[in-house]
Length: 261
Image 1 (cartoon, rainbow, N blue to C red):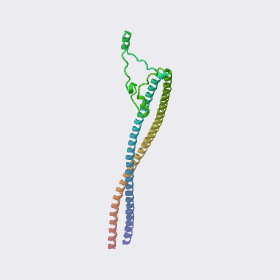
Image 2 (tube, rainbow, N blue to C red; image 1 turned 180 degrees about the vertical axis):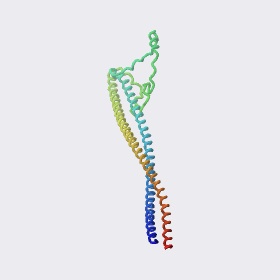
Image 3 (cartoon, helix red, strand yellow; image 1 turned 120 degrees about the vertical axis):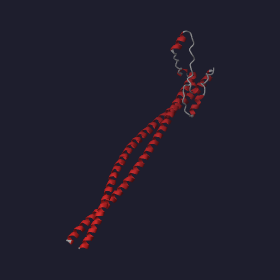
Image 4 (spheres, rainbow, N blue to C red; image 1 turned 90 degrees about the vertical axis):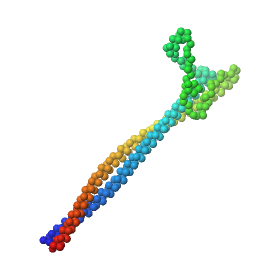
C-alpha cells in the first residue's frame, strides 16, 4: 500500500510542479508582452501628437503663403494698371491714335431729365485711389515710383523739339512695356509656385490623414491585445497560486506517507 501510494503521490507532485513551471513561464511572457505593448502604444500616441502638430504648422504656413501670394498678385495687378494708365496718358500727347479715352459717364435717370431740361450734368467724381486713378493697391517696387508723377506736359511748339520729346517718350513707353513684361513673368512664376505649394500641401494632408487612421487603428488593436494579455495574466496568476498551494499540499501528503510507512 505504502509503495503504491507514494508512487502515485510523487507522480501527481511532478505534474503539479510542471504545471507551476508552465504557469510561471506564461506569467513572464504575458508581463513582457504587456510591457512591449505599453511602449508601442505610448510611441504611437506620441507619433499622432507630433503628426497633428506638423499638420497644424503646415496649415498655418500654407495660409501665410497663400495670403502672401494673393497680396503679391494684387500688387502686381495694380502696378500693371498704373503703368497702363501712365502709358495711356503719354499716348494722349505723343501718340494720340493709341490713346484710349475714358468711358463716358452713365447718367442716372434723374440726371438725364435734368440735363434734357437744359441743366448741367453734375461733375464726375474722382475715381479715388492712387493719384485718382481708381487703383487702390500698390506694390512696393522701385519701378512704380516713376508712375507717381503727373501726366507729361503738352509737346513744345517747334517740330524738332516735339520730335525729340516723341523719341524720349518712345523710350519711356518701351521701358513701361518691359516693366509690364517683368510683372507678367513674376505673376506667372507666383502662380506656378502657389499651385505647386498647394499640391504639396494637399498631398501631405492626405498622407497625414492616412497615417493617422492607420496609427489610430494600430493603437486600438494593441490596446485590445493588451487587455487580453492582462486578463490572461490575471488568470495565470490565480492558477499559479492555487496550483502552488496544491503542490505544497501534495508535498505534505508524501511526507505523511513516509512517516506512516
